[in-house]
Image 1 (cartoon, helix red, strand yellow):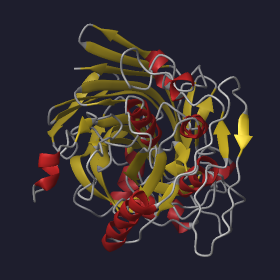
Image 2 (cartoon, rainbow, N blue to C red; image 1 turned 180 degrees about the vertical axis):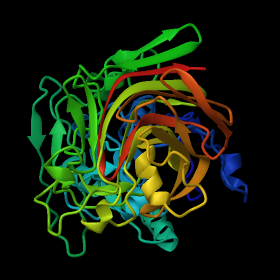
Image 3 (cartoon, rainbow, N blue to C red; image 1 turned 180 degrees about the horizontal axis):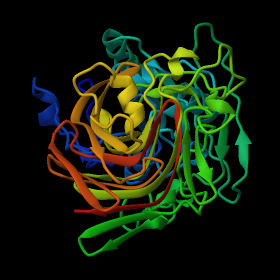
Length: 481
């Protein structure tokens, strides 16, 4: 920005899942030796496509014929209302040159070395592979991409963009406004050493507003025209937001995989075939995960490789982000033997469990884990916290905080294993109220435990199952507190 020439207009915006203010950068700010500060977008995650579309909208009022958009991002789009295809059409239809610079400091970007079109987040959702996003935008929309491998590489990429803006020629083609037909463009230069960046396709109507719908009077991508799948299940009663999902609508947005999917009457998670074939596991390979914006790996699952293993931990989370709330759901679970690791390859000791996850964000999440107390007794046999009634099959639960680290997580106990008499782990109504740092657990409407922890201040709710187990959840209800 500091090499800007007289007459240049510079605007900047911070973005996460939300958009910050699109604000001008003044000459006084640029002449200062200190950093240029922007309004914080707040929140977490990333809506790359919506951010670029927002910039396109703001640039429509610019009087300068030459325009450029520089997006510094890991490319991992979790929250955009627009699809990649809609963004490509919008970029084709406007005059700004688009530069994409990969951010090397995000684990999600470092993990995106897969060639598959989609990759799976730790929350279980599938998103566009960042590598594919950069490639598609470069090839189809004429964007210039830089993928640095280090902080120095990031600086060099920024310098390269500055040099291009200072030295390049621009050849413009304006198709007739009477046609929306997409036209293919090819540019050839008979000069040694010349470098060509071209938009291979162009749309007849250059007005991006005709392709992207914005909220009236703003440059916000319209929530009404491009709703999130879960929004039809959200109601606002004054200052309180309520989210309900009985999973009868299979397009309500939850992950749809072999180990986490919609079933008749609910939503099921499975770490293996815990309920049939004498507890033998299904052909599911063990995967590890990074943060919410990190990647498990390819979303497209091929044939399993032997030896067969359980998946240690399956998580599915979706819907609005919550700070203070109460979440409840009905659970029906089938638990495999706690000594399954003696018969099958497990990457950690087996303790079959299932339950709720909450406040899942980029740093980690809380989990309410439910297990039969007799299974818990087998694992704890010979230790001080072995339940006195180890021969019974009553319900046991604990609350843990799982903090993401690289491709796995560390776990700390928030509320230790507790026995709940007269409650079945195979069928229970679970609820958690989380307000501030106060966590309260309910089983079948009965308050069974409280704890204080401030590891995570907000995030998504969902479900989890730990090997060997599978569980079906129904009647999800989340109320803002």
